[in-house]
Image 1: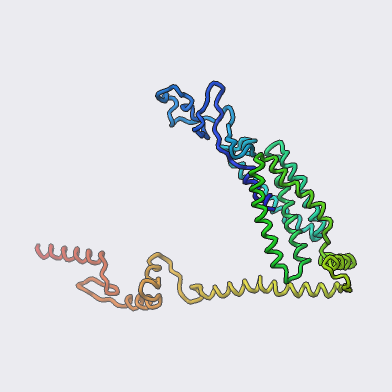
Image 2: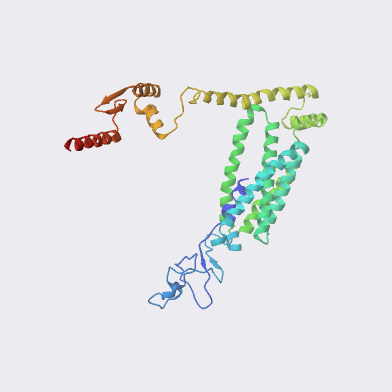
Length: 371
């Protein structure tokens, strides 16, 4: 799967590039220009003409682009000139692929529950082999994106059904070990993809090379046994028993007498019983946690919410006094009125406006007395 998820790093590589000069000019190789800079073409000029001042707007490449082929011989960028204004189209191809992965998870997940894990897994292998290889033959960027989207859907089908078969057949005690070992193959796939990309530097050949092995996977996937659990749930107990005996023979247990008696009603009760603790954890646990956090809300603690910035500064606990003490002190100070020379001070604090008013009154009294 690493070959598909990380393939865009190589098939959409961005090599160094510059505008292709016209037939009568050439550009020195040391210049890497992503915008037209015609003054480099004036090799014999000693000064730049005024009309070629850097403040003037540049024009697009009229004769196409020239790409460096030392690292990538060809990519979708060089194939369809996905540079400058078309540069976002490079990332768009990977986004479309991941959209296909998301759509495949929804579609193939439901189909596997209806038609079985083995059938959908075989179909996903075939779809990825055919459409993935056809991507290497895409005639246009639009066709490339459509094929990558469908390939992403197939990748989801492979992952979901392979994991389902693995989990439903492997004993519980061995699932952790098998899952860990399986994850290493993704790492090996990354290293193999890097070596293959270094060897095949043309994106079409690389695309086909990483998708051809899925034809082999499709052929041997018919040897897989359908999930016994899925067969039992779909009232196909005889086939489930047959597959279990086949797996027992492969594991060297030939003399095991296996019988399978399924009570559909009892199984439905068991599934319902298993669903009860799951819902308690999801719904009940979330409500309990939310209720616990509600205990710390200001409204729950009987703390009035501040209305202005001044209220926040006065009531913030880090200001040196608790909010309750501050409110009590404020209530006491508001009740205290001290008269000082005709000026009323509230809370023992004289404001600047009060001092100015007092000085004005004293000045008026002095003037009348002088008269």
